[in-house]
Length: 295
Ligand code: HPA
Figure (spheres, rainbow, N blue to C red):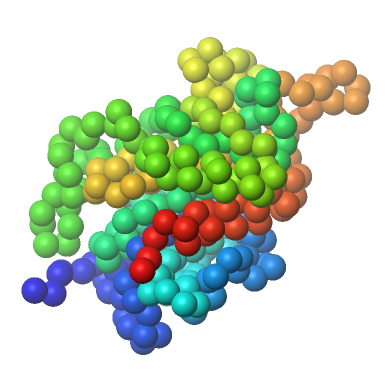
């Protein structure tokens, strides 16, 4: 029986059919700071097959955040029946969107059967071991955004069957196997790799130094304004999730400026700091997928 699809998922499906692409099995979400990661072409054995801006998918808002153009890029493997989606740019609560609107960019592909999700973001490092350009694999998260994508009616597929239970367990939110695989690949890309807890906040203002001290005290290692909603919605749907933070800056109050005062944060300087590492992170993800997926 043909599954009932939402308008958004159907728009993606018809593009895949027109291009003669197999069903995608994985999705990489490239957050802020990762927009140039595709500029040097697509690493590994994959080629770009097609792309579509968010504005052409019913139900997905065009992105308004600087550094996030907002589109899906469809990639396929040169020799294997393996297809994936790279989501360039993501939506955020601070753009005035509700969690359910934000998570549609991953839940439409989920409707089409995508099972493996690699969620990247830029984050402020709060661990003394962090240096700008390092990577932190997300072991666990703290959602301090004040909102949850499972609030309201239990999220369901378009045919009305719930994606998951009303009270979702989050004990193993992040997939251990993918985290291990990606960690190995990141180290081969000569990136310094940490593991830790990501705290998701509402933004859009950066934090005060007092807030950063508070986050350190509650056991967080990196802070950002995204990801925590997508992870919960995806877990609820039974997908496998790997979370990857690029440490784009040291969090507020933790690094000194030349005058001895704490250094101030600047969004564009943060985006700039991501360039080298973001390309390597994307390559590491795709190499891991290539190694572990597809006939
Ligand atoms: N704080 C919040 N979000 C961020 C940061 C930060 O320091 N860096 C990148 N995204």
